[in-house]
Length: 280
Image (cartoon, rainbow, N blue to C red):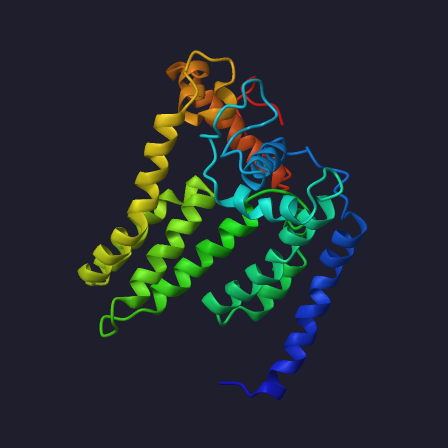
């Protein structure tokens, strides 16, 4: 274990690596790009409703329907901005601060989960994409922090320990799912990993701690969902929207377009694609 003085040079490098992201956040603290992602606006109006005690609703839409598309974890986090500064866009600098502070937290968690990856952690601190997420009202940084925490807690538990680490990992995974529904896969992946390590009791404890949050959200969303025939279904239901707009013959083309978009977003220079199917 390195001594504290030995860690000082790395700490200095870590802080220096964060300077570009900090400079970007300070100079764009009023979020001139707000609305670029579209989802950020939905998160903010849902956070406003929570902060004002109006329930979990999309207050910018006709009839103020319940927000059943996104779980409430991230809007609940953003509601802190509305409670501190209940005026828009005056509260956008608070939103920037709430999101940017997650960036060093993410990097520290990454270093904790992968202790041999000091250089990669520094490179991540310099990532332009992470820096942009640090000034965006999007759930990726918070959900990734919780994902890394789950990985760290689960991987550090051993067959000889109590069930506390598995229970804590399950509770953190539950919080992660309520921030971003894509983390639902943890309910299957982590117990599978425990079973592979021959730790069936830890698999059961993890699932028992995470599953109630998944079930509760699904039940609430189903009970409060906007009718499928409503024109607002895009804003309230993932599955109903895709069932209405994507047929089975169109599915391969949609997958190719998403792959092309992902490749373009990640800076790949060349993507071989069938002519006429994908445009980047």
